[in-house]
Length: 326
Image (cartoon, rainbow, N blue to C red; front, side):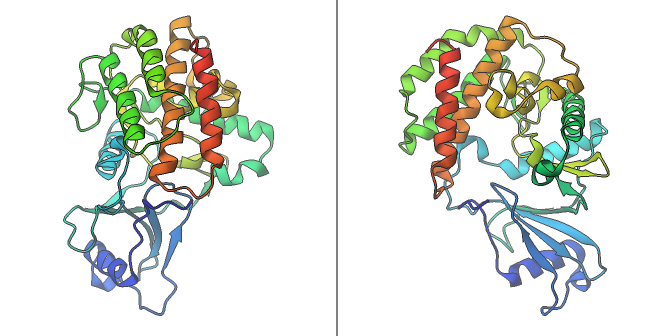
């Protein structure tokens, strides 16, 4: 996926990063085929790198400092590193190991880190080649993985690094307002009035008060961030959007209120949630509203060259506002 947030670096800079992380003796000769860009990501640039030893690793580089990113994306690489530590320390969910991280900006104008290469298939890439039972099995496994991630407790609601909020209502409404502020700042047309959306959020905010325990929320755990091998999940990738909040905000539940996000039946079965109350359904609609706002507004920040995602997400916003009475 192409985006102006991808901070591609010249080969000499990449070689210097490898030398700092693994030692000069691990840098391959210039004429060797040792580096290639991984194109599946939507935000950070990522390279697959072969070391002189033959081992493979992945380098992720944060966006360049001059590129305007959305409020919640600021410091995203630090969030991912914190999330990886939490997941490895508190769960059995497979994630890559971090080999080296550098925030000095001496070799590159942004943060970067190296992690282990996962030799597996991207589930979103191979999904069309699978049978329905195979797809259901993976979706069920993603549900179980998501539930395990949600067992990680937080001290407050909001960013992993803080500062947090005492209530989920304050944290979520703050997240939504940050999105709306981003959209207004860049003049994004939501095809609905910004004040209308604020009014809908306020009218249903009481549903958020049921959530009293901050829990780790991966939020972006969709098939494109899942690597699979031999019928099992080999790794979960891209943790830069994690926060402490309501587990019901996980992406796998989005289909409860909109079939366009996919059939959630297998995911819900794997997660172990047999039913949902009316208040929980209202919360999920608020979360779909938030998701649609992200998907609309990011197309401007990332300078998409087509309107395909924008048009699709505007339809999801209209659909969700209707479910919430507008």
